Image: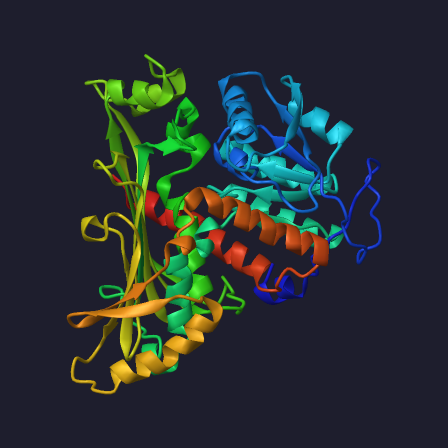
Length: 461
C-alpha cells in the first residue's frame, strides 16, 4: 500500500459494542475501558502508573496463569498502595490458556493494551482490529518481514473500521529530545539540516540498554523468552524503533515519510551480547536455560543474544545512523543512556548522557564555526521562542559550546513518559484528531527496521 493512500486513510475514534457494530464516527468516546492482554512486559503496567482522564478505573486483564501475570498485578498493586498519589485501579482478571479467545468473546472494554511477547503481538493486533477494538501497543509491533506485512493489513483494516492503532513512543517525551527538535526548527541557530554521508551521517542516534535494571523501585525479573530473538525480536527491530521514530519526528516534523520513495537503507549489521549462567539466573530467576534457548548457548554455557544492531540509511537524502547496544548492567550510578547528534549548517545539536553529565541527558549546542561572532546573539534572541513553549529553559556557555539548562521539573523520568504517551493516544480517541502523518510514518518505521534485519542477517556470519 502506498504512503499516499495511507495518508488518506481516516482514523476515527468510534466505540464498538459486543456485536461489533460501530457507533457514529464523530461521537466522542466519553468512557474508555482498557483490556490488558497477556502482559509479559513491564511496560504494560507503566501505562497505568497514574490514573488517566476519562478512563474507567476497572481494567480487565486476560492472560495465562504464571509469574508474568503475577508480576504485572504486583506492579499495579504497588501503584495502588504507594504513599504518594496512589492509583485506584481495579483489576478484573481472567486466567486461562484460552485468554485471547475469551477476551474477544467477552469484550468488556474498547481498547486493548499490548506489551509482551512480540512473536504473538502481531496476531493479537490483527485479530483485535478485526474484532473492532482499538489497540495501544508497546513497541515493536513487527519483528520481521512477515509480521510487517500483517501490520500493514492491520492498519488498512483499522482505517476501514475507523479504529485507532498506535504504538508507544515514549522517547518523544524526553525533554532533551524535545528541545533538540525545538532548536532544530530555529534557522538562526541551527541553519539548514545537512545531508551528510554514510560514513559521516547528518543524524546519529545511539541507545545503550541493560538486561539487569530496577523498575518502579524493584529489581526487574525478565521472562526467559525475552532472550529468544524469535519471540522478543532482535535488537535491530526492537529499541531501534524509538530511534528511527525520532529521526522522522525531529528531522521532518509533521511530514509524511513514504517508505517506498523516501527511504534507502545502505547497510545494517547485528551482533551478540553474551550472558553467563549466573547473569541469566539473576535477571530471570531460572537456574537452567529453557530448551528453546539451548541452540544459542555455547560449549561454556554462555548464552549469545542478537540484542545489538546498527542501521545506516538515507531519509529524503539525509544520511542517518541508528544503533542499539545491550550490556548486562550499567556502571554504578548509571542507567540506560542515549547519544544523539543533528548536524545543521550553523550548529550541531548534541545530546550526551555520560559520566560528565552524571548519566543524565544534556543537550549541547555546538556552533559549526567558532569565528561566527553573531552566533551568541542569534542564540540569545532565538531563546525566547523556546522559552515560550518551555518556560525556564536557558543556555550556559561552556568553552566553545552552549549547554541547555533544564529545570528539574522537566526531568520526569522514563517511567512517567508512558503516562504521557497514553494521554496523547487517549486524546486521539476522544477528539478523533490523530495527525495524518502518524500511520504512514509508523509503517515506514517498521519497514526500515524489518528490512534492515533482512540485510543484517544476509551479511551475518
